Image (spheres, rainbow, N blue to C red):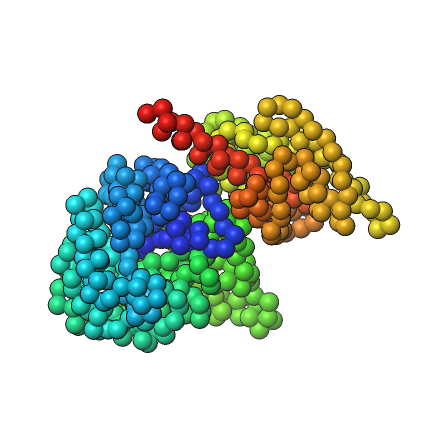
Length: 517
């Protein structure tokens, strides 16, 4: 039984999904959960891309102990230096460096000859090996590259010191049979291939990312790259939870396994979904809400007689708890704390007390408290900003009637303690709320996207609102949770504004520190 290493790029490629914007605290929380899941390698970001990315990679590297942390770099000394500076204090600093190898990329993007591409790749790997014990080199757009050229450049970068070679299907173009052939071809034709691990990184533009990844495993891939819930650029990446469960269920066929703790899958999926605002489709394989639902009478009859008639994956395998009712308004702090630990959260005493009070407030309003409710409360507490930056919603009143103009009156507290109250109208209640907030804010803002989900089910379910907006010329996103949809909408808007203010504040602080040195 071969062990396939899992390379998670949720925090790098996954965060490049349109509309997703995680802050450093949220990235650290995702990284901790990926560590609990048992991921071998966590790609924490692209340090040279921004100060925020650099800071996140550095802090994740210092936090994670049981997974290897890596950063992405172009084949440039500046990028490689940025990854080293962010990870040099970790137990196993690791670099992921890439360069395109397909004719279309070399001609139109790089504007380099094949020989120049080889020289650039070799120099980058040689330079990186001065610092990093593990260097992974990726042939961007490998699946549209000339095979003879691919063999040639792979041989050279392995000689230069690459430990892992990644052959990505960058645009989701290849088919499973052809992708398997690619791995078999390089194994048979690269003379020094035995000295490295081969990795597969597939995109889902044609809906074949999982199938392609499994085909790579059939043909000798040692490492699979992907994201939780399959998020990522364009149509996304291979969904790691699908690949891991496929290997477990079809051990007889693939003869391979992973080190993942499969009962952490559902929790990881839910966390990534909540923090990114990308809802998991109900019919999504493995982690969708309908993955274990049986509607057909024939299916239900079979399930009652023998579950394996229609269920090849048990809910317990991926950590789905069949008992949904967990706590009530009479539950004490001790029981609450035990549930917090059971759900995999590590809160400070201060945060635990705040979460307990939030739970009690919800229990007074909601008859049944389920895991999803607690997960939402705990995630909000775990990832909320350390310092109050920006604006606080003090009071809100909304007037609505079919024959009346919706009007929202809102009172906001500023960071300096001052309070402003204002009322505005709109064509609907949410628009009235946002029109009022926008008039109070000192800088211009514009709503770009609005999404609302329910936490669990029932008429008393919590509402989660996700927004993306432009504030003071910068795109930002935020989320808000409350039993009332309108309150959740207001909190989501202010959360987005405050996240933008926090990033600006941190940037100014760093500039001030640099100026004083």
